[in-house]
Image (tube, rainbow, N blue to C red; front, side, top):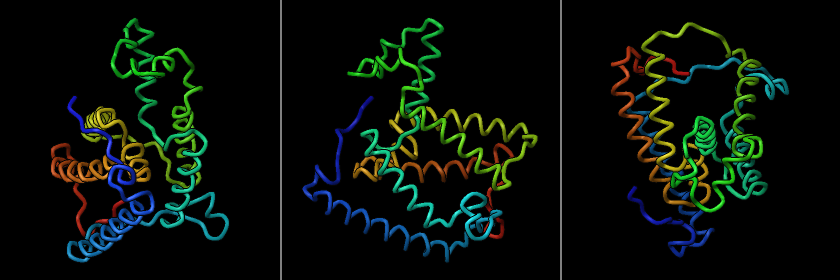
Length: 233
C-alpha cells in the first residue's frame, strides 16, 4: 500500500526531543482550550457519574480521577518502553492470534509480507505467552473484568440485535483499520504521539473524522445519538 517514510517530530525536524516535547505540550494546551471553548458553545452530554468509594477504598472500587488515571497511564507506558524496548501496543497480538489460527488450518501465512520481515516469522512458531503484547492483552482484559466487577459495572444483559450487529461491524472495521494503520488508539495514537511520531497526530485527525461519521450513521442501527441533556457513560 502507498505510504510515507517515518517522520519523527524530534529527529526529522531538527527540534530535538526537548523541542518536540515543547511543541506537543503546546498542541495539547491548544486542544484543551479548544475543547472547553466548544463545550461551552455546544453543551455536550454530561458524563454519567460512576459508582465509587471514598478514601483508600477508591483504589480498588470505583472510578479514579482523570488526572491520576492519566499520570498512571503515562508512567506505565514509560515502564513498558524500558522493559520491552517498544511502546505499548495491542493490535499486533490480534494479527498473531489470527495468523496462528489460520496457519493451523493449513494456510501459508508465513509467505505474507507482514510475516516475511526480519524476525517476524519466528513468532508464528512460538507460544503466544512468549509474545509480550499478547501477555499484556491478557492482563488488560483480566484487569478490566476485575475492575468493572469490583466497581459494580459488570452485568450480563440481553443485547438488541441491531446493537449487536453495529458492534460486530464496528469491531471488524476497527480491527481491520488498526492493522492497516499498524496500531489502534494505543499503539498508533497514544504510543505514537508519546514517541514523537507524526503518524500519531495524523491518526488523531482521522479518528475524529471517523467518530463524526459513526455518530452520523448510528441511527441506521437504531442507536441513539446523545443529546446535550443526556448523560453519557
